[in-house]
Length: 239
Ligand code: ZN
Image 1 (tube, rainbow, N blue to C red):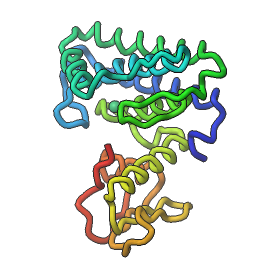
Image 2: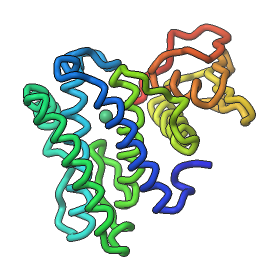
Image 3: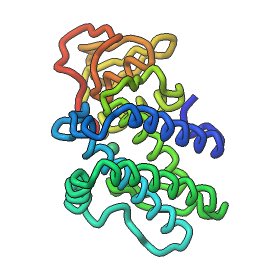
Image 4: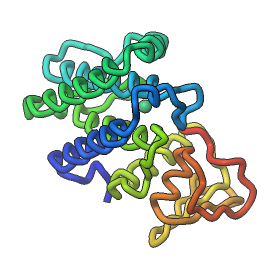
């Protein structure tokens, strides 16, 4: 089962659970801990908090766009997005925690109040993809669950709802295909049909294991729990 096969209210519930999962991990850190490193190179927990807060605000802009038809992009530019995160990381710990809570609540409110017809309205993501506004449920879900792991607390891919893992793997393989990466690679998730990243290539490497472990490996968050056969220098980049 993939995320986009779920009913809208189930999707929203998984997004909300992801926010709660992130919040629980965040609550364990002291203000001083927020200066500690995440799993993302060069980003402290303060950067990650700024990013997750501004991401919710950016998704609110997409929902406003869908509701009004007036174009309001997620970010003015990639530079503006990066600068906002850098500047945000210098906010006080209390302000960063507030930013997370308030923007998540605002996004939830936008979802609750979006007119039924607006869910199908087309908006554009930061990567330039044109998607229906309904895609924001997945965009946010992916962010909160993965970044809860990136906080470097006890967040685990094994805690993710399985539609999140399935859709995440689909997204990653789709990106590899688009970029021509992962030639010869086969992903063998237990109890599922193996996925050749490129059907027509000679298979030279195989990564096998439970869905959570394969998705974690593919997302570039470590190789615990997977068996790797053949030669491979780690997963190709996907973002
Ligand atoms: Zn992110």
